Image (cartoon, rainbow, N blue to C red; front, side, top):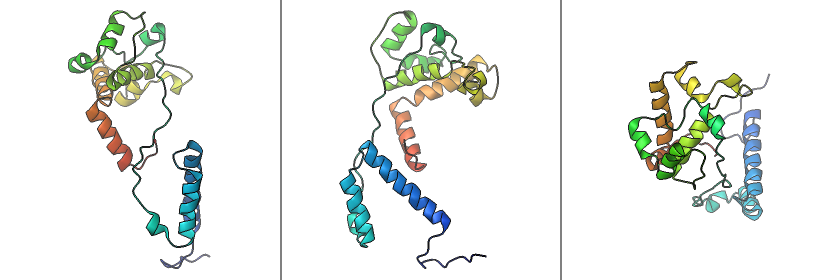
Length: 186
């Protein structure tokens, strides 16, 4: 039977080794994505080995961004199947949608340029709620959130407006704070 080691005795248990491995793997990923250089990583690791790590610790001021993705709108036929269409929002949220989304609602077959993040969020939510039997048996997020197979129109409007809000400046700030507080990698 293995005995527990006292704090500070310098021994690593299996959990510690797992954490160390995950950290090293994360460093390798960041080198591969270019968010840190191989030289920086090796210098920092060498400083740890030499017991000089504290002198190298400076706050990271770089914003880490993933490659830009272009949102591809589903076809008009697929968008019509969405359980949370862009047109189904609370009145205030609907009025905040930009000119291009308003025009897209009036003239669905025409192409309009990209728009504000709130508009993109509204359209992405619409696309996310197109049933697909190959994905979750056709159950879409709005059904999961409301916990009903046939959610009421009011419930859909409230959930869709809430998700749209995440695309506003206040919503984006909230998401950033959440990601930071939850220590998530995005």
